[in-house]
Each structure stands twice: as C-alpha cells, then as structure tokens.
Image (cartoon, rainbow, N blue to C red):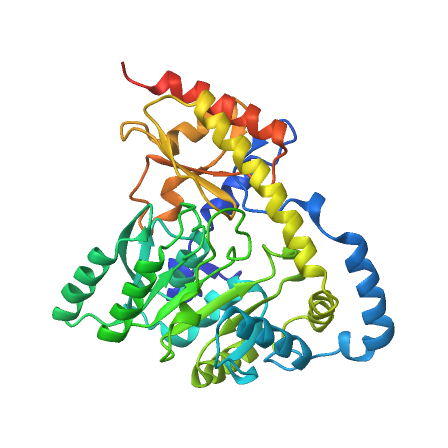
Length: 404
C-alpha cells in the first residue's frame, strides 16, 4: 500500500506558502509578455569577462581549496575583506568574529528565523514588506504585527505605540524586520531622523532589529545615510547583506553582521542547513573586491538603473491616470504604485496578462494579503523600450478601470 505523504508532513510544512512572486513569474515566462514584475539585476551589466578571468585564476591557483568544503563561517579572506568594507562604512568595532558568510541573504533570513522564532512568537514588519522575509518568518510559524510606511520609511510614532501595546499584553516580540534603503517593494528610504528614533525604541524596549539591506550600494541620487548597524553602539542590530543585487545573484553569497554570540548560534544553524556556502564563488567574490572591480561595476549599475528609473517615472507621468500615484526612489530597483481602492490589483493582474504586460500584486507584500490596491514595478531588468511600452499598456488598462 502506497504512503499518503500528506499524513507525514510536519505541522510547520503544512503552514508553508509558495512565494507569490515566484508563482506569478511562472505565468509571465513568455517572450511576448513585457515583465515589470521581477526583482533581478540587468544581466547585460554582469562583468562576465572579469569574472571569467578571476575564475580561471581562482581554479588554477586555489583550486584545491576553491573546490573543497570550507569553514561554515566562510573563507577567512572573504570575511576579512567584508570586515574591512564594513569598517570603512562606519561599523567601527566590526571584527571577523562578528561576520558569517551565507548562501545569499535568503538563507540569512532562514537562519535568523531558525535561531530566534518559536511558534507563536511575534515579529514586527513594515507594511508592505519583502515577500521573501515574510515567507521565511511564516515558515517558522511567527505571528505578524505590521506598521505602515510613508515617504520617510516606517512610521516610528506608530511603531512605538504598537510596541507599548503589545508589551502591555505580555506579547513576546522577537524582533522588528526593516529594509531601510530603497525598500522592497515601496522604494522608500528610511530617513536619518527615523533611523535615530528606531534605535532609541530598540534600546528602550529591548527589541532587536533585523536590518535587511540588499540595495544600499545602489544609490543613484540623494545623500548616503549610515546603516542602522553602523549607528547602533550596543549590538541590538543584526544586518543582512548580499552580493545578489550588487554583483550577481548566481554567486549565491551574502553575509550577516551581528554580535559574536549571535554569530556562534548562526554557525550551528548553518552547519545543519548546508555545512558551508560555495567556496569557489567566495574566492571569486573576494578577488573581485580585492582587485578593485567592485567600484567600477557599481558605478555602471547606478548609472544604468538611474536612466531606467527616469524612463519609468516619465512613462508613469505620461500614461497613468491622474487618480494614481507612485514613489520616486533614489536607488534600488522598484517603484510602488497606488491605485484607487476600488481597483483590485489581484484581479487586474489577469487582465494585464491578456494585454501582455506583468507586474507584482501589492497583496504579496502583506502577511495576510490585506492590501489589494498597490502594484510593484521593476525597472532594472526590462529594456528602456520595454519599460515605456509596458507602462503604456498598464496605463491604458488602468484608465478603463477608473470610475468617472
């Protein structure tokens, strides 16, 4: 008699959800659909020749180590390089013991969830928030409390109010999860004043901060702001970083900065997950930085993405109905569009696919799918021509939905 596998799954696995974005992207995997839905870098910009040359040198000169298992914490040379980068950023007390290399930042989210979240624990997230973070926390059976964003990032007045209320009820708040720079999906940046206020709140109420910063290096306008982990002086911040947006996602590399005791626990969790991240790509990333290629590559990325962002904002002004509004990011990859509340963007998506254009529905970025009048648009992957035509198609579709 064959096994009914559904009766064997753990309670945790039963609550798992598919990534809304990954499921949507399956529907748009067609050459005749203009996709403004992804969150991927422009592959035309990848420094393929440089990485090919570095890879050749790595395998010829370090092949024995590059093709072997490595330390769970990461290869020492890359960790040292990342420590030096962090110190130059302003994380003054950073040492190699405060850093672990991960298999991109999605593993960082999984490991943080694994060592902190018990079923029923409460975490505070921005509304909206990154779908991959929500998915990771949900898999470990967390409860979500949301705090809305505005043009300066998370509303710190509402955040403190929320924490006070939860604490008064005896709720166990494990951490708050924030994306301070060019937030995914909203594109907004946490202001310096609010960064200071968030740290004060964290210190006052003893609530840790998970700072997820994949996009901080992709600032093409405005003033660079210090990271929360650099501003914090008492170790309340755990910072997640990744090479996926600033170099290449195929390397599958990220890193976590945290207090030594947290890193030690993360090492144990990672040993149980995958033993170590790929040694070969760690050597490649390390050499790429050490040889000075990162600066030139990021300059190209910033220049290109700014051009694409400007085209998208111009197209939105030209084609979208006046009843809509959108964010104006100073970096990153996304524009967040608000439509009238009577327009359900989940339902509109089906019509958009018929018009050969795709976006990500706003509901994907809320833990309970409670918002259905937003759209996330990506400007980094499509061409300039696709951006203009895709926004035009969406604008024409939205105009048909507007009530007179």
